[in-house]
Length: 86
Image 1 (cartoon, one colour):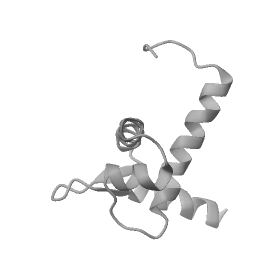
Image 2: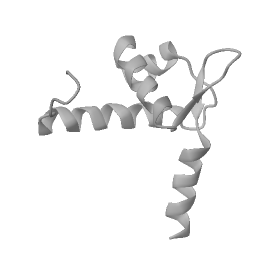
Image 3: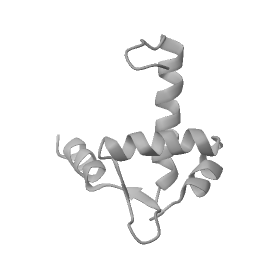
Image 4: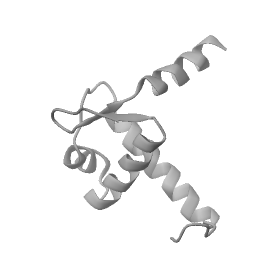
């Protein structure tokens, strides 16, 4: 998809499901690499990498500088806490 093109509704829903599956894959796990996330979600590694990059850019995942694996960010914790407090 080129920048500025609109997504149709079905494609948008598919993307949301894929992003949710990546976030859920972390569960109680700490750090996960692209291959581990792809295996956990059943998504191709290239798709997983694109989604993870977007989630890092949005501040929802962070990458460990030493091993290059990913973890949920504090922003996700803040979102969860705001839901619990409301």
